[in-house]
Length: 101
Image 1 (cartoon, one colour):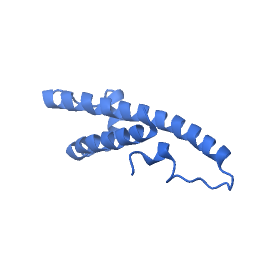
Image 2 (image 1 turned 135 degrees about the vertical axis):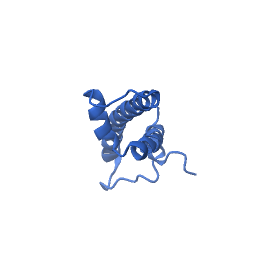
Image 3 (image 1 turned 45 degrees about the vertical axis):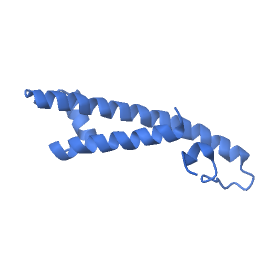
């Protein structure tokens, strides 16, 4: 998985979770804390489906953020070593540029 793909996944996961945040009126991090502590009523079929899907999306996002942190740390370390002026050129780096022209 490339850095661009990780970032794209994080954005897509955020968009999906926003639908649940709007529906239930709570941010994902707060929902997840309630969910893992067993504090949510989940008696309706729709709630059970929504909550399990929402928790899954959140867990995937947490994992993608860990992957991102590791990848960006390694990449920036490499860029710093190879940058003679001490200035990083993000725009011309193919690993950061994604699918730009």
